[in-house]
Length: 439
Figure (cartoon, one colour):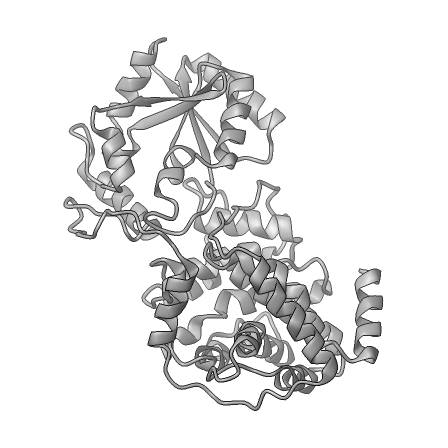
């Protein structure tokens, strides 16, 4: 069980020790990494006996822990057995369970004798009491979220054997599939060689292990145009639009057009079976726009939402999908940004992989597609005379991209060294430090 689950379970126990947690917070820890990418839950479903008590508990949870999205359900009766009866009427057997903290230990309750087996093995099968149509919809949603589950009910036959995620093995598989890529000359100045040594030492010292991607904490919804809203409000709106079981906002036609367009395209193995649209949602949720001009918020959000669309054309040639995506997205430019703003979005889509390609090239000069610092720097300078601001925009998209992938989040602390490599000239570094201090 992950630490984030224990935090939520302890929060619930401080309000009512008889309450159980079910839903995402209960089953995500079992499915995360084994059957799909690891994320924290979006909502926390709490069950306990008694309608009046349920109302009070929900109010107390919302007041004491407003950072979580609570859904409190009252169960008929007053005993644990009544909770078990409620769980038996769930549509999917793996989901017919609940957990609570009992002292320092977690106490589980299962709706059926084999509920735990289904949960551990990633089997999605209906319960005897299920609504078949609802079970198909719910099971299908789980299969999208965790692509490596198995379900005879849904006609999905995959291995349920948990797979360990070893970075070296995954990287080797990626290299075997990659084709082509532009070759660059990797000449480094003395200053760049110094930073390169720092980068190589960082790689030696840091474990390449998967990390849980955190769903942003609950915030207020925007009161005006969400695309221009502060990050916390925009994220809450995006969650409400895409991940919430009970959306409160009107469907945004442009947002869903973008996501629908991306639903058929695959990602690389690092994304553990997710499609492009799922990665687009998560990366946009991870995006930070607090260090840029307010007028650039919507441009960064559009860039992140569209950044991998080029994978519909070419997923295996390093750098090709970014170049293709910069051309594809422009056909779907919304009417609420200008042509000049659209050029910024195109630039950010085209360059969103550059820091990663530079890092790979520094580790292996023979890697086709690896970009030397001089080439990356030249692209930024072509876009803007303000190199500091150009890389800041680019870094925001890059960090959102890798930060949204469980198997890549370990790379986030390396980003400052990659920035340093681009800005190593003293004049740039002086301006960069000044700008960073000001922000």
